[in-house]
Length: 276
Image (cartoon, rainbow, N blue to C red; front, side):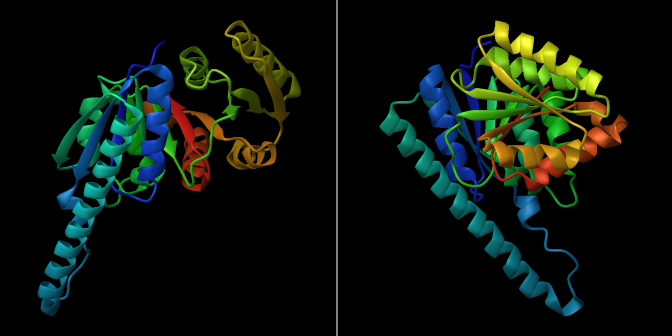
């Protein structure tokens, strides 16, 4: 499973510089090209909420100010991206778009191997939109591998794989291992299960799978709730990346999995690898 085309979201949000650096790092290693997509979602930026009868002028000025700030931030992100690619001699393309951001990204995701974006973009994807629904749309459209950047840039040396034993979780673990996004990364498997026997079986199976693909993985079985244990384990082990299964449509059928994934998305202080 090779990585030859990387899709990079350039929305000008706080995490965009980190996303640019990550995409370039991966393009260098995998000899991939990057498609940088700038999107100014005008309908979203013009949303200011209820407006008093005598506040129309102020609301209009606020809308225009927000839109101008967004255009400026996106322009700066694009300039940084282009200069960085040229300096590192990375093949790249640029798509400058306007409209509903994730609708456009889903169209492009079909033709790329990996998508990189700032985690904040998921939560800023439209008024009242659930970030899980946004990710589900991306997965259903063909975005099989995604890296969501959160906080400051950190080299990836340690990856925590949160494995529940579900088909979706297993698929995520296998994609991460097969793709060898970071071939030299140190892995730690985490399974949260009430039964120690069940946890041991899950860990043994996935450890063996990692081993035949060239990875020796540490393992941890926990009786704690995955909703709290995943982030705590990442902190304790000093993981640089959390690998988290994403069930697409199936998330609506499993409130526990959905709640866990949403909690990690909202509270992660390090990058996430998401896949289905």
